[in-house]
Image (cartoon, rainbow, N blue to C red; front, side, top):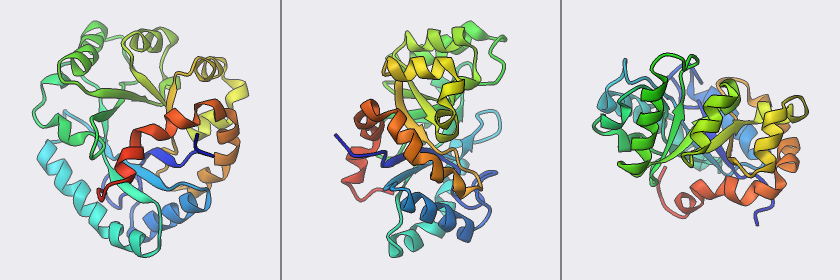
Length: 232
């Protein structure tokens, strides 16, 4: 078992890729803070909105931003950056061409953000998730599930969807009963900073690590294989 959390599964560190880090130096400051906290790999997951973005154009912007910071990060021995996306779930997402290119590079892992209001088209949303898993063979992670109603998350858990929680939410675990339940039941498969600008979020990582200690191995698992490659 790993000694601690080595993977930041969700971040907005790429300069100018979305409303996260706005400059290369800001990206490097975040990466330095992540390294100081023991992070060795960080998933760069800028927002992808299917109703606004074209896959090819999004990837061009994301990868251009990645190249602005990647070599400097390597030169400083900073955490390895694995590009991906935080994809907004919408009905019919499973039919989008090129969706597999938004997975964390080197994996079939797709990070989804659900709409804040699930009341409209709810069944279509769940059907879309089911097809993403059963027909397109994605491994689905849901970002910050604590933002959504219990009935929504309970239903996606029946589909073998995995939960990604933010450091900030886990750090306040005692105030959040259902997060405690998810941790106890082993439902938490990833931890992310969801960092946009404030590198101080990593100061809470030690506390989070102690809270999810029995789950450390599965939390680090999604990117362990990628860390053995030259990707990112």
